[in-house]
View (cartoon, chains in turn cyan, green):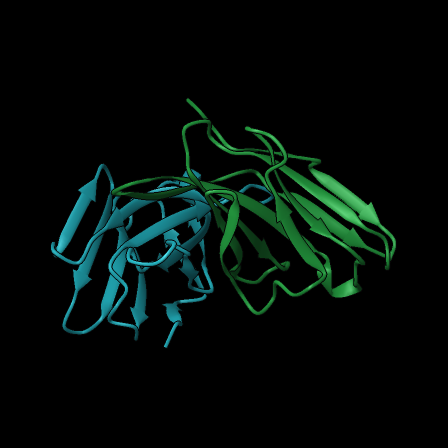
Length: 113
Length: 114
């Protein structure tokens, strides 16, 4: 019940295209859902996050869509660029605890020029 | 911009040796975490630390692991007797607390146990 399932495992998108990564969770106690971007050899960097009281959050080219009833959320990267090539992790957290993050397995995104 | 720092960036040790990984969290943050990432796998929670004590730990964090905040700035992870399977990237993270839930990660320490 603590798992966060992420798909796809890898994704190739052409420059200018839309990258979509999906996550699903089981534990309804989760109430904060961040996305992290990780470049090789670096730590995860917080990209964007959403709370379940909204269905969508947009920051620049990055949008989270959230479906509370389906217990799913997704990251959309508009106008994908080669510099977006990285591994993306979704995560979930229960704010009532000590805020430990449960991560998905990651999606390796490659944006071809 | 404030950031979490970690030292060393790479540590090589022999099986059975003790290692200490060091982190300096963001200065006004109250919650501190260690996570690890085995090569090619997801990031896994190890332990959280608040108010100078462990607040939560995972099954991975057994008696071989300990954490400490020896002074007002450093946060350390000690592995008492390293095993081959401890080889991984270890990330420190910190969080401001209150109603802010963002966790900021350091660049990691790559631990290689031979």
